Length: 148
Image 1 (tube, rainbow, N blue to C red):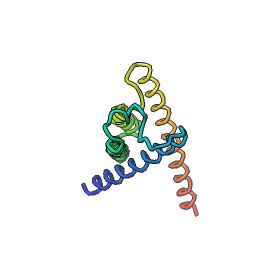
Image 2: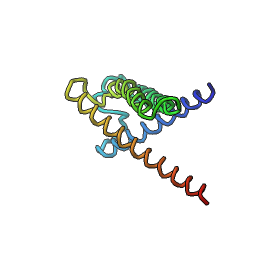
Image 3: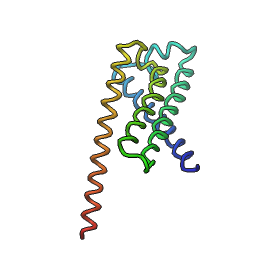
Image 4: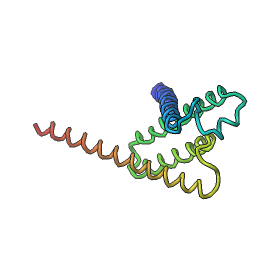
């Protein structure tokens, strides 16, 4: 249980850090004069900019929680890799999508949901292949050490 709590806390803090870095990146990229934690439409829903930042921090923490807890699916060794990957994908998609919508990263209509889904899937597949390659390289190095 302690392992899961630590994973959740670590994920939440990592989510906040990543969210902050990404929001700063896009603010500089868009030439903003003041800090906006998300889109101007998102920020306009709050009475004070500080409220928008606070809500963003909560969203980023929840996003980090989703990804840290979802990653634990890969520790279920009795499942095949395919089953773990499919379940992990859907857990990430089902729990991350509403958070992305609350952050006003996309509009809820069919074209935007389709674009979001395609982008999410492509990013997931890319990250999955990168991780698979890293694991493959680790296994190769371990096998080479065992041969010596």
